[in-house]
Image 1 (cartoon, rainbow, N blue to C red):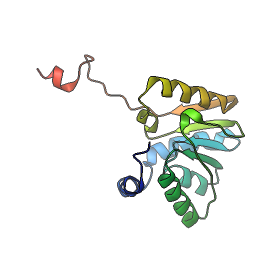
Image 2: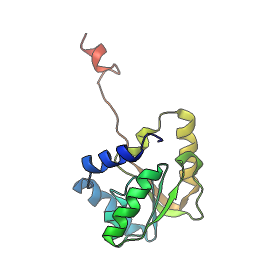
Image 3: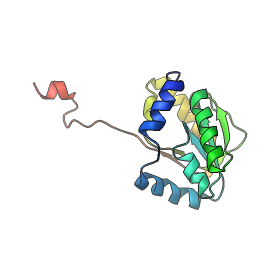
Length: 155
């Protein structure tokens, strides 16, 4: 996560200025049904967080990158919303509340590659999930059909 410095954040915002509409509608539908503030760990510069808040959803954001959070604050101010934002690594997540809905859209969770970090992160997410709450993590998975890499398959 330390790679998301100022330049990476600027590139990310230029490359991904808005959430994909289908994905946004999917998360908005769950957020509207949540009945309380939701948590978006790995919120980055607010690609989903800010449009959700603009629709009246209370969202708490967490990210490890101070540059991403700075960009999120700037964009939130322009949008007229005031999210609660925390700078924390997911595997050290410690917030004062639990949430009826926790979302990690856009495959961000796939940035975690260390099995120990992944396990600790999932444990901390579970700790912050309200009783009966829902955790939605979008995962990107490469499927090659045989379990081999594309290079091996083409031989």
